[in-house]
Image (cartoon, rainbow, N blue to C red):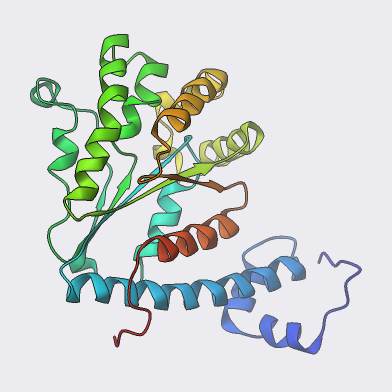
Length: 264
């Protein structure tokens, strides 16, 4: 059992004796008391924020609001995990999680944004994009999935596209989950060695470390060109998953002007 020089307080003992505390201790070998205490604190903070997310959704439903939250970031940055924590306690009938596959041959003949527009929220709905139209800003040019001309057209249109979204009354939140190269390599290794997660590893993922600097170049251009006053990016430092999830939820709650006193 790992211990630190920090003395365990009576309050800490209560946390460790809770159901979540016991699960946190037993889930790792060797047992790390400090880590278990941090996890209990995280779960407590998460629960409070999830209550606010329920209020946010109630406000969206009651007022026929429409919300889009897009998640971008490098592979294994924790986008899916953050979306799961955001959505696990709210009404699934009034939300949609979108992770589009590669475009079909028919979709390739359409306006680039069209397949994303087809997923936009109806009144009273929140849509979460696990990767979005910004695929064309980074992933596609880095991996040769689009031409230089297609990339340039996208970059010339995207700000106006988002202006139209906002002017139509849709709330748009843009989040970028940022991890280090070392952390990404660590997570890839964990995925490769976990039979329950190996399916997550794609051919694009396998080249991500090799193409790290290319991704960085396009990412910087994306921020420079599309971080506008009306549609800003929020960069979430995501090397620590729990902190990233808390910070992400806090930002969404701050960004959407919901009624914090609404009855649910």
